[in-house]
Amino acid sequence: MKNGLLAASRVFSAISTAALWLAGVGLVAMTSLVAYQVFMRYVINSSPSWTEAASIQIMSWFIFLGAAVGVREKFHMGFDVLLYALPDSARPWLRSVSDVAMFGFGFGMVWFGGELAIRGASVRIPVLGMPQTITYLPIVVSGALICLFVLERMTLRLAGEPVDTETTERAISEV
Image (cartoon, rainbow, N blue to C red; front, top):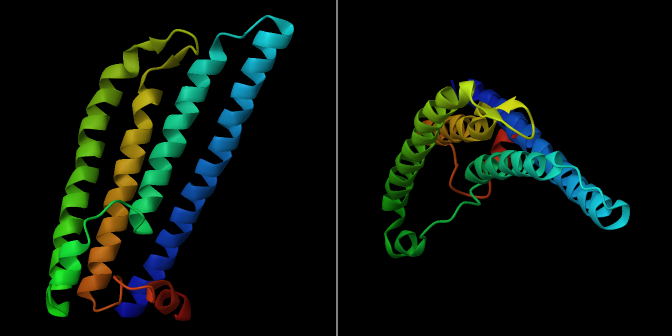
């Protein structure tokens, strides 16, 4: 069973890496669009109207994808003082409580972001001509990834894998 969990964890690692690369490409694309807009405005004196809206859409994608990757890589904000004050045996429980809270937050992103996306399907973004659903889709995708990554961590913890230490990646790569 542990080998299956670790194999699934490698798949999640690949998904996380792909999301991080997409976020990086999005950052470069947004920077290029803004540079193009500045060039068109100040050099050509004819700024395209769609570049700002497109940049904001791209930015929301890379921010939310990066947030999901941050949850998997444990870069999210935390209050670790209590972890160091508790005995070692209590730490996994406190981390599990934190994971449940993060899962709830991710699920809320999927649920409420999905409602916004459904409501925005009939509305068009005027400058882009795309449905407003595109604005809320990054919230849904990021929430789903957060839920997936938190479930991975909780399942590995229940299986006795060292998910709360720096050796996690080493243990996964050895299988």
